[in-house]
Length: 497
Image (cartoon, rainbow, N blue to C red):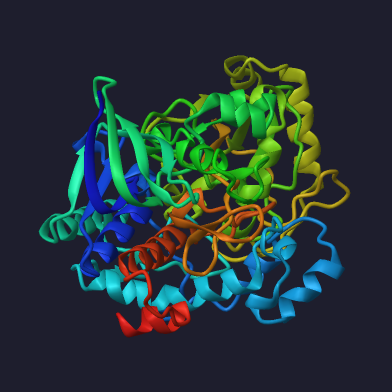
């Protein structure tokens, strides 16, 4: 027999999305429960382990390209006859447009408008922000960071939630949603630490992450090569996709690119959170066969690392090697771009290095010889695009192309991590989950990675913002009286800053 707990709002997940939802709902006067699969000392999902980069040029303004980048990567080949309806007021959109799998302009605008007010709201809990050094040695857009990273966000919001009377249920997993006869969500079923059934009654906010910790879902959606992926940090292993699956089971609409994910290059030998390897633009990338397969430096590393990491993912066994020589020491503070705690694999000669990497020495030597011959004279500028490119080489190298001729040689193995999955649920600007006819499912909300918005290429430094913004939107709306008026979200959020 299950135990029933009754609250005004039930939040599944304890990362940035769930915590913002819980705090906002509690501030609105609701009684709130938070269900967290992890034990208390690991609460926070991926947020706990991230630096929490924010794509903002100030504490109140998003970057100039924020909406443009999201829109340009907001879907596939969209039917222009359908898209033209988005120029009309949202209430007049046909249902087929409201549930179309794309990041619609209403949602993107609401997201962008709410970022500044949400940061100001986070500051009220003692979180401080600054433009700190990042792991990107070259960048095209600024990154605002919370001092103390994602862990600071988790601790500040959890403390605020506890002070507001939010009750936490740790090592508790949401399993399925419950509905009444008119399909209103009435709560959810869960299981406790020992597998015991639990039941929670109340409005539901799903903030429990994507499915990077679920091998079956990754294989189903991303494909068989997903076996070569792993979460970027420990928090990702707790993301099993239940939030998405339980909403789909009751007819929720989908959004986001289910066959894709945010790719980041990491050292597979390291077990630390986010052991990234961002120094490959200063050397070359070779696969297990000893061959180059991509332009290592077509632009600043923050703008190109994801597309390059996807190419690494498609190599034999999903792995490549960043090959460097001792001229890497000419790059100021280059170790900022190396988060791995493992030393490089070294060789006094290329043949010695090839033996350690288990690749054909003659092929690696030929690859480096051809690359070196294609490097031309020019001025090397480590921290800006220097257009020091190869000549007559395929694939080319567009920047920072210098011969690898100063041994000993070093190599870092690199695989693609799955930072977050793209596929999720379709929501409106109130963070309400829509059904497949474009109608909000009553009493059901979603925030963070559960919400699908990304396609093709991730808009960098927006996932923590997405969790915070839509978590707060969901919490505010869920706590509001049933018959209350709902102004535009940007106005609502401004009014609560």
